[in-house]
Length: 131
Image (cartoon, rainbow, N blue to C red; front, side, top):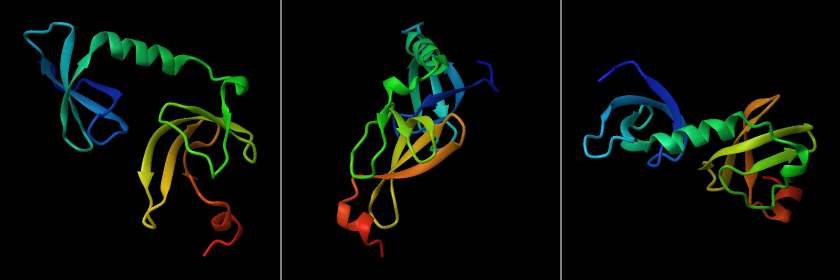
């Protein structure tokens, strides 16, 4: 077992792309390996083929035509590509979180701006009259 080996992978427990530490191979299933999330310490088995596919997808360049335009009143899915017209930037939704006010927020990894949080499913009256 090689300590110090890490990957970046989506943790199924905390639902974020995090740094995962290699903790060992699965004896009964040689194509799978045990990794531990360094954020929540949850251990999970990762399939080598899934990991390779995820890495290949992350290397693909996102085009403007593939993206959905961001609007705060819409809802989005993790992994979806969006375009923010005010910032003129393309990004991929990494995870979803709840704000302290109970609203839903998207964590988006933009190409130029880096990681930003955006609100989703906000009603028009809240947009027009914020508290």
